[in-house]
Image 1 (spheres, rainbow, N blue to C red):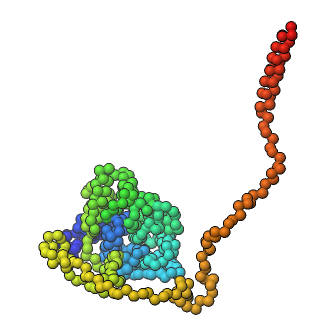
Image 2 (image 1 turned 180 degrees about the vertical axis):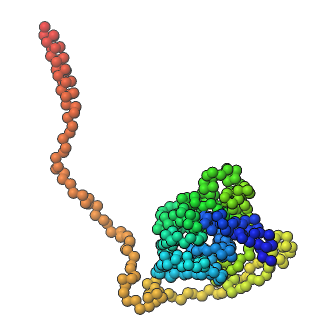
Image 3 (image 1 turned 90 degrees about the vertical axis):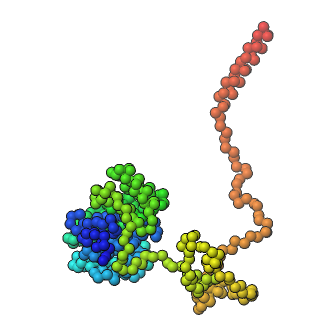
Length: 401
């Protein structure tokens, strides 16, 4: 018995969890809605997106996924899903691709990983424009991973306007979109404002929480937003806080659920399994079980089993003389190089203690005529002198009498 049957869920819905399911058909179909899936790294956002695409495939709904991280590289193993991997320097005839989507019911995963960012932006821009020009008359859902690289908050790459137009105008044509990012604060608010369904995993960054608060506060009860943000900050791996007023009106707009784990294909969005490349643990395989809790460590032997093996130190030997750095570069990367133009020397910044001439380099004429001084005070001196002379003359004349 599968997950859907075991939980008594209507199979004609997009089932993401036990209580998190959305209508697949009819006028309320989510195929033409705009989703925003977010969460910090490792919280499960790519897994959730993959589960949604598997559900689209199960229900016969078409999707096109632009996979920037190669997290969905195994989806083409499903019947009805194809894969496309452009190489560096290759272009894709998006008008022909969209035409093919209209003629078939197959979905498509386009691998963008490994391509320059500008090439990725151009591919998505061409696709969105071609899709909007083609009135296919059926629902197609576009999934864009790492959407902050294509509709950033700062800057407007070539992909910006086509994606925003798809989010704004797509619903009338039956086109929906899912924007996936781990940084809500880095995604343009004009695009986010078009999202009607938020699938949010654990977010702890204050700027990201504030960005979600700003997007969800418009027309929403503050108590609902506060409850939503509290659930987002406390969510564990795989748990999702879904906000969809259009679909969860009778449940307070919010549904908190754990995303189902029964995938049909293997997920490629896992972290790299880091192993020792050298040193004490190189070549070892530690198969002993590590105690899962403090209560299981009941003896000193249990602790000693977790200790690292002692390293064997080799005697010190003098390192053989190495060639100069320029010669090493020549031998390793350019064995037949004879042109020193590729190996430019650093500029000479050496300091010399020789006395430097302190003769000024600016020439000037010592006999140059000085500028005339201001004569603003001349009238004042003339008046004072005239008064003083008059007083002296009057005093002298009086004494003579």
